[in-house]
Amino acid sequence: MADYDFDVLVIGAGPGGYVAAIRAAQLGLKTACVESRATLGGTCLNVGCIPSKAMLHASELFEEAASGKLAKLGIKGTVELDLETMHAQRRDAVKGLTGGIEYLFKKNKVEWLKGHAAFTSADTVDVAGKSYRAKNIVIATGSSVTPLPGITVDNEAQIIVDSTGALELAKVPGHMVVIGGGVIGLELGSVWKRLGAKVTVVEYLDQILPGMDGEIRKEANKVFKKQGIQFKLSTKVTGAEVKDGKAVLTVEPSAGGDAETIDADVVLVSIGRRPNTDGLALDKAGLSVNGRGQVEIDHDFQTKVPGIWAIGDCVPGPMLAHKAEDEGIAVAENIAGLTGIVNHEIIPSVVYTMPEIAGVGLTEEQAKERGEIRVGKFPMMANSRAKTNHEGDGLVKVIADAKTDRVLGVWIIASLGGTMIAQAAQTMEFGGTSEDIAYTCHAHPTHSEALKEAAMAVQGKPIHI
Image (tube, rainbow, N blue to C red; front, side, top):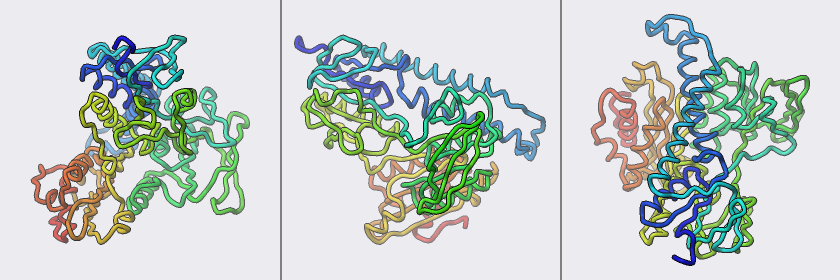
């Protein structure tokens, strides 16, 4: 140990990095974590998962009251939007959680090295002008917003913004155009729609939510249209400029055709994320990135250079905080000589709109390519709790192997879809069948009974439809 400053040095304190550092320290390894932000938690806690959920929740409550939905429940009265207070509670949530990670670092004796890290050799990095040598180095640098060529984001001006800027708007825009019909664009677009903005989503593909089950994508589109969000599908943005404090977008059909312009008060550029691998001087460690800017790893999260590991958004796979967290635990355990494994076939994904959209495993299209399947579906409008709560939009869909009945995929549109998907993921992790779900007693009345009924529908025997 005399030759090394640390057993483990983690670069990045996002969900993957801070979890890896804490787990390594718990396993008795002298651990440091490099982070250049003023606060820990990475994109997720500072400008991503957590602040967006704070705004989603607050905007849902506002919309329920302002739209008159509560009046139908016998709750009457007028409400007004105090946007600055709404922002303040978001910032307070972020402050509490990022501070919590700093406390956990101290509790577990993880040393926080403040600054940017760059490799100087395969086992040494420079941080703020000081050199640190570690037996094991974990790259967990996360991802950042993918820019759209030809369009300049200026979060300070609050006209053309990215997801970070969309969280900080000082006023509700009259018209917001969201470029990209993926998870982040739909979540943030729905926030400002509920607060009073007209929202138009421009998507290059012929349907929103690429990568999700086809039927779920179409159903989600119907739900959002019903809520008043407008869509321009199979449409590409070819230009954007700011005139007199507003944005003017030029769009045209993805397959080619006549161009048109769209005026907007705010444009949210949300076309995806890219790995943060620039500036690490990977070449000095003997590493390079693939065509997507990712660090390639093996099953154990090791790179081709012994002693250097990588996890999270900067490696292949879905860019999801919970995927990074699981990898953080696994890589620390592998470094400690234990067996750390992540089943990348069973990583749930959730869109935190209202209703939520969640999925795990194969889509129906993917499952059909592998063999014969059975599909069971159950509408949320037939679920007693959802109906009582006036949350009837959506459905649950269970996809199972026709011969073995093993669950291959589950897709949910429901107000509690993100919570409900956990049962599906656990069932699949243990190789469970649709019958296992169908014959497991579910509390009544709960939204989760819809998953039980969808599982029963795989065999053609649901009770309530």
